[in-house]
Amino acid sequence: MLRADGTVSGRTRAALRAAEDAGLVIAFVTGRPPRWLDDVIETTGHLGVAVGANGAVLYDMATEQVLVSHSLTVDAMRQVATQLRASFPDVQFAAEYGQSFAAEPGYVHDWEINPRLDRRGFPPPDPIVGDLDLVTSQPALKLLAKDRGADADEFLSAADGLLAGRASVTHSSAYGLLEIAAPGVTKATGLAELASRHGIGAAEVVAIGDMPNDVPMLQWAGRSYAVANAHPAARAAADEICASNEQDAVAVIVEALLA
Image (cartoon, rainbow, N blue to C red; front, side, top):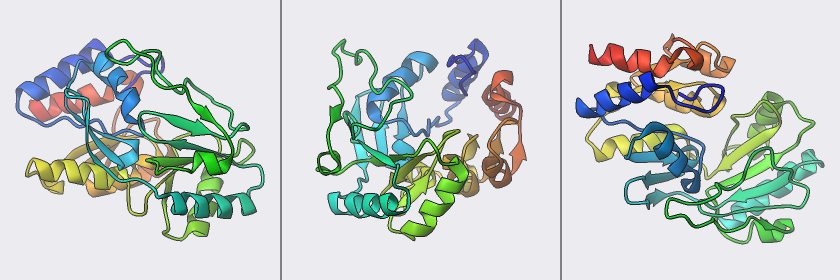
């Protein structure tokens, strides 16, 4: 939905408003944690329930309440980290708790970890920096594993084999950054959980995505689209290929649904 400059077009905002006015349920299904979802509100003008952290959390954007969360346990994170570091010695770890973040000293950030201010005008807690025991000292929505020298797809394939179902592993990056969640937690399970709250079945869901973390959702939804410039895994999982994000793909699909 976002253009390359991080904005949402006026056409897309109008399409989202029209869909909401028509009674459709709009769900933003994202890898972002709750503290970054205020940006979605500001960018789209939409207040609803989002599926955050790749399905690990349902977040009511209007009330700023976490409705449901599925976290990795401390033991699970430590086991995963030990296994990955044995095979990828250069890997560095971080943990996404939802409203706060922790990372090892060698974990180099590639974007802003926190928004400058929350919706009430207060700064979020500063990221915690410490060793792996500290990073994994409390349950987390996501464990992040970064190896800048690894190919993203090869890293994902290797980690998926190593962990053998003990965690859900995906990526949404152009470099070696894995997003690791509790076993079975994906964008599909999060969206299904939200849909069930509205009495909506998979056959009634239209999903749009672009990266490997979208694949389970694209496979689950009754009708799915990958944007034209999507990752090959997303394109293979989708029912159809649509326009690119720069061509207002989301707006085009929503307008067609409402026609």
